[in-house]
Each structure stands twice: as structure tokens, then as C-alpha cells.
Length: 201
Length: 246
Image (cartoon, rainbow over the protein chains, first blue to last red):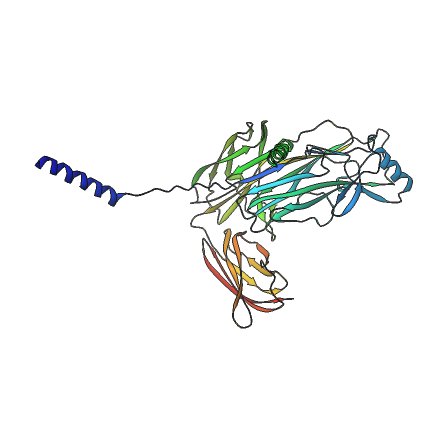
């Protein structure tokens, strides 16, 4: 009987000990993240394209721009007296959309997307390529109020504060043709690479 | 009944992405004594079903008055930063780890900075005509402050005219100031009418930062008194001014 009582007391003591020293460890792991998603990898301006009729347009910042094609180029040569901006003939990676889409996902308040560098030089000059970033949803603001000649560095859009979440921007490129351009006999078949940089300072 | 369409739309969105890269952590801010050394690991995650080859470049930078990064050799941390590996491939739907080793240079003072740029290669399609190819990069901002050499300072000016509240923050010190706080706005009768937050705003040493704090709901036209209270790792700062809302 005495033994049972001692065992019971020991049990109660251990229980009360467990209660007084009980504690929980709450571990919180929230990694900061900065994610960039891009669909369009290539914007093609083909003024020798014969698949388009020359009337197809892309609306950029409320203004319609004719897609580059042979028909559109010949019409331009017939009537133009100066320069005209053309939209791409086609884009690779957008599934048929006439614009690229850049998505930023982050839990950081501040981030910025800019043209960091341009590789290659076009015969007619890289300044003939214009860029326009249009906010679709999310945070931050576009820095391009009109199609702007590309240069590096050039901030396209950023969030100076409260940039957390998912932000979606459309990215348009246009190419300026001038009726006075003297195109080499061999034509122009060139490529430049535009490097986009996302960073959270 | 809408669900199959939602699923189809999300599958299409996934299929369209050509580059899907995430960087974690998004930034590194370290403190070391001169001569000290530290190693950090950053992770790059590829959200696509194909592998993503990346290359690494180091660029010294400063912050512009608008908070953007600009290449600048003035507080260059890059010579004291080693990245391993400098070229690697992130597996499909996988993660790659990159090791950064920093050695705090003896003799330097305050905060130094380097941008570690991870770049995915362009994917030329071989199409004819004039072609613009996109090549995306993620930049990891790395700041190192040398312990014992800090000379923190801040000058804040608040107020002016406009629908958004103009704030000017100057950093004449030698350390990065990362400021958190708020501007408290009072009307003519002394009643608080708005609180405009500032969260982890960086001001580069020797630089300044201009921000315009926009209230969630526009304030009625009039004159307001503003008290700006900010805090950083180096102390608390306050400024007062008048704000005219047209």
C-alpha cells in the first residue's frame, strides 16, 4: 500500500513538473524572395513578311501602330514623308499576344526593373527601338509615359514602397522606320539583346 | 462548371512563361569588423520544366535619388566578394545554391555595396528580319558595413506643395541608412488626419532620396502640419514641416 502511494505521488509530481516546465518552440521561417517571370523572348520586325495584309495594328498606350510587314512597308514608302513607328510582326513565347508580359512576385517593399544592358548594334541605330511598359495589375508604376528609345540603363517600372505581392506589366517594343533610310543591298537582318534586370535595393 | 476553364487558363499561362526565376534572399545586408570574413548562401529557383543556365557578374553600385540602382565605383565591395560558382545550371523546377564569401577590407570605412547579377542567356530563334531578344537578370544587392567605422548621419526635410507629401532624405554619413517610420499629418486645428508610412527605405551614404508620400484617400485642399519620425539601426530622427494640398 505504501509502495502504491509513493508511486502515485511520484507520478503526480512528474505531471506537475511537466506542466510547470512545459514550453513551445514556434519557429518562423519566411525567406525573402524576388521572382521574375517573362513570356516573350523575341520581338521580330520583319518588313519582308508576306503573311500580313498591312492593316494589322497593335495598340500601345492608346495609339494604334501598324505591324511590320511587306505590305505595310510598301504603303509607308508610297505615302510617308518622315518617320513612323511599327509594331512587331510577331512575338515568340506569348501564345499569340501582341505584347510581352513581365511578372514580379516578391515580399519586398521595393524593387525595380530596368534595361541593364543592350548587346549588339543595329545598322539604323539602337535608338530606333522604342520600349513602352504598361501596368496591368499589382504594385509600382511604369516610368515610360510614351514609347521611349531604348538605352542602358533605363528604368522601366519600379515600386518605391509597398511593392509586395504580384505585379504584372505589359512590355511593348516598336521600331522606327524613316522613309529616307538607305537600306543596304543585302537588306538588314540583325538582332540585339536587351537585358532586363530585376533587383530589390 | 467554370473550373475546367480556370485550370486550362492557368496551364496556358504556365506554358507561356519562357523564363521563371526566383532569388532568395532578395538582398544581403551584413556587418563585419575590418578584416572579418563571412560566407552566405543564396538560392535560385527555376519555375519551368527545362533547365536554366545562368552566369554571374559583379557590379559596384549606388542608389539614385529615386531609389534605383546605378553603377558606381565609389563604395565598391565587388573586389572583396567571391561567388562560387560563377556559371551554373538551375535544374527544371529545381533550385541551385550559390556561395558568397565576403572579406571585410581593412582600411575601408562605412558601407560598401556590390550587385551580384544572375543572367539567363537569350534564346535566339533564328528568325529573319530585325529581332529584339530579351535576356532577363536578377540582381542581388549586397551591402557590407564595417563595424567600428560607422559615422551615421541623416538630414530630413518634409513638406512643400502637392497632392503627395514631398520628403527629402539626405545621408551625409558613411553608412547605408534604411529608414522605417511615418509622417503624421495634422490639420489647422491640430487634429491628426493621416499617417503616411515609410518602410525600410534605403538612403545610400553620401546620397539623398526623394519620395512623395501619397495618402490612401486624397486630403481636402488646405495647409497641414507634418511631423516625420524615422528610425534606423543607428537611431531615431524627426523633422517637421508644412504641407499645402492644392
